[in-house]
Length: 420
View 1 (cartoon, rainbow, N blue to C red):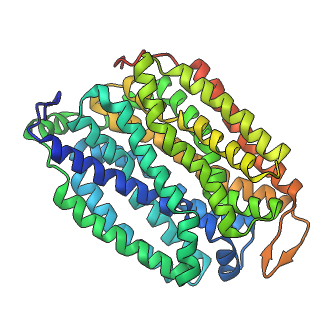
View 2 (view 1 turned 30 degrees about the vertical axis):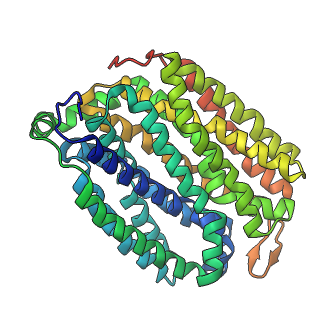
């Protein structure tokens, strides 16, 4: 396959490598959203309220976000194959540890290790796309990667809930450990090796020069602001609080609520690759992100303030919110184009740190706001929050989504060309 690096890797090998990377990212999303369908079990087994539950779930995001910069540096330096394979193997160990946890402390540590290990999936897979595919395909491939991630999130809702009801949440974590262990072996065996030319170029580059270059670029941080805001509903709401909200406010069962909530991820899955393709097609990045921000603000405001009782209308609004959020995919192309190619993984990692950081910040913040407005009701050892409490807590997501809109207005347009 012909690339700008003159890498002899065949098209088939490149596609296999990219496909395995996307599967790893899809698995990362299963782990990311799994807490949303295990909230009652975790609250009961660990004897915690909303704030503590939000913090436990967010340990994934704390670790994922904090390790993003090292992940980008290591990927720029050593390539994706060994790093992703080793990380997937460690994730299997961490998943078993979480399944065996008997306290909030040990569960939080294990959850953090899960987040740290799957953090290699996104940047590593985009590195594969950058190494062995044409630059013109990058935005579309980033969209495909997001789409597979969302498919993982969809599986992590209602389908995974059926598994939890069959074997319990601990047994489910054991199954997830076995899956990622197999994936670790496949990544090591089938992801292509870097060419000698790629190794020489990447090993010649100064690590800290790349970090300074990406971090000192204001456009990097505007992209990060956009990513934080557009991902906040998906990670703060969809990945944890959507199912409890649907159950408490609308009266759905956990399985029914998980199916409805999954429409958010369906929207992301369908439209992420389309947004990448559309951006390349019109030769512009910013208008898509501006429109996406406005869509998210309107539809999510309708979801929490109007709270339609008709299931079809509610699902449609959640789906359209996913459409708006999916425009965030275009931002990854923008941050790559705003930075030089020798520090592209580092720039992507800085932005992705903030994207995932939205889950780390918003999940516990929503939980804290829920506890702040809790009326004291407990049913079956689980705290029950009122509609008003949820409305106040979830309104915080509108604030950060508005930040994405402002960031998209201020971001310099690249016109789909490398300007960094």
